Length: 76
Image 1 (cartoon, rainbow, N blue to C red):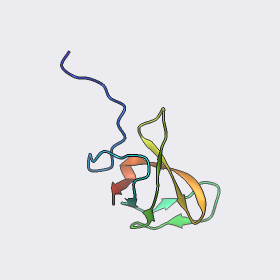
Image 2: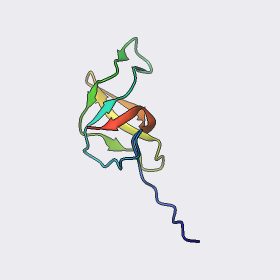
Image 3: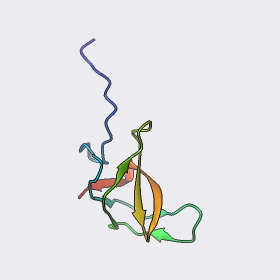
């Protein structure tokens, strides 16, 4: 088949994400396990790709490492 399945993390707009990228939240997100909500527009620096799940990245918000769905971010 002409289509190769590649494990690529992409943001809400189809841009390829890589370890160390900076992303911006495209919507407000509740941070699990806290009462904190990260507002839309929050900048998350030095993300880490979750190796076996292309829909998830990890990033620090308020000094807390959280898992963020790639469909809720855009590359900075």
